[in-house]
Image 1 (tube, rainbow, N blue to C red):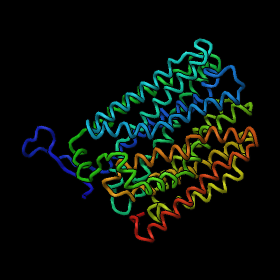
Image 2 (image 1 turned 30 degrees about the vertical axis):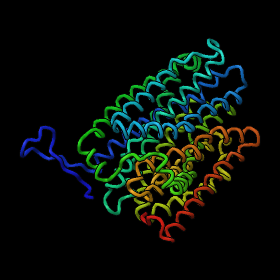
Image 3 (image 1 turned 90 degrees about the horizontal axis):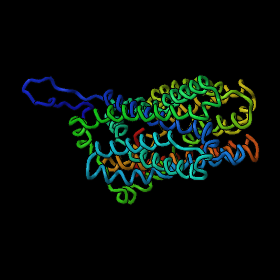
Image 4 (image 1 turned 180 degrees about the horizontal axis):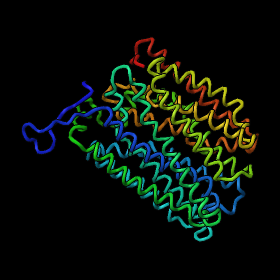
Length: 442
């Protein structure tokens, strides 16, 4: 297929200027959508450290309350595959626009509802129950928010630049983290800790809802156009039944789910976990560490951009394999740096974000191109859901529990397991390619 598609604009007047669809236009929709989703994600993640243990579990000690909060945090990742299955039905019967609208309103509604959540002193244990239900709502919505644009972007990428275009959707993660951390730092500084915990924390959730609404219309403006409908149709990027996809492509889904585990495990080891450790085990200012997180995320952003030309030059799978080995080494010594004061924290965070950017920039597409094109839309969605569940969903809970019970060094075990899983999955995938059973591109 050509990398562009031309159609007459609405009205169809003869001689009207034709509209040309380019990968750059697809990239705009992808960046807007992913940034809004990750902003929503990090607003909840930061609140799960700073707010929810005190809001829902004040009767527990600080560590146990944090672990309960992280257990609820993981529910969204458990719910995502069910959201994908549910919204695939909407996609097949009512169209991508209807599915996306319902999913993003569910996401925004669940997020806004959290902002109105009463505390434990008002409704007792129901505070935790309601928080869990709303978190599940977020997870179902995230599963349904898959719009297929990253797959379409990859398919329309110019020859020899697939790595560059593959990294574009991943830019939303550091951008979302930077904005969310900055917002929390602003309210924490402006209001002070007492007022922030009492009521100020609710404002970032209102902002997340507003951004979701803006992102919805921005994405629909792209997804709902006849030009994009034609591109999806011509590329056979249509939703397939979940059962059929799993039956036909189960092996590729499993390999694709484990290939990015090193990256996804590291994702929470440099975002959520270190913030929890600083809050629980140090006297450092919350705002100071949020600033460190913002500063380090800039390195991650640059590393994601750099991953594109590196992957195009040396191969996407080679880059991910080398990064997985580097993450394995990092897991053996880096966690201890969190007890090394501000200098140690900076080294841990900057180093972690650079590794994260290089591997996260290419991780999601490492195996997705192996799907036959007519299964790629649904297969990529399922692969993403399962990779997040296996690699990231329980990372904050497990890492914090290990660090609290056995010392900081033990938290690296989870990260090491992710690196090992990535290397094994890439090896299995390479063996499949050598046997000629998979597409050998990238």
